[in-house]
Image (cartoon, rainbow, N blue to C red; front, side, top):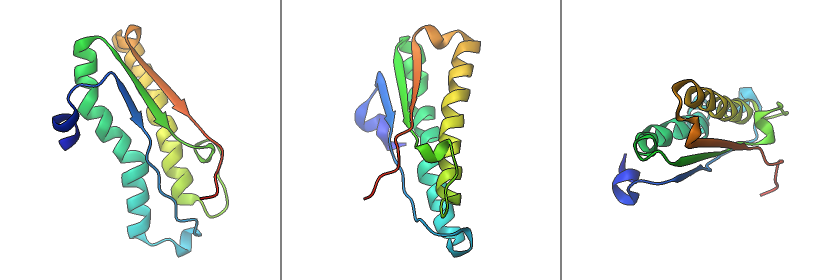
Length: 120
């Protein structure tokens, strides 16, 4: 990815991207659902994959994932969005356990933030 080349090593990574279409599952095209998953879920994995190795090597880092209340509870017209945000919560929890199991949790922290829904 280009981000590490542009920004170098980071100590705080904030994964804060999200798109929503607000359509029923049958009105959501496969293309739109794929894009929601690419941005809201796979984007998190990609940025962690890019920046975590240096955090571990430097023994310093905090990864903040901004999910949504939609990552804790489904809503009408939110199948793709909520599914992607459930994924964001799962990524954060799993990463935290991975860091604990590998002994990196002493210097790599994770936080998941789940703001309430917004009008925007």
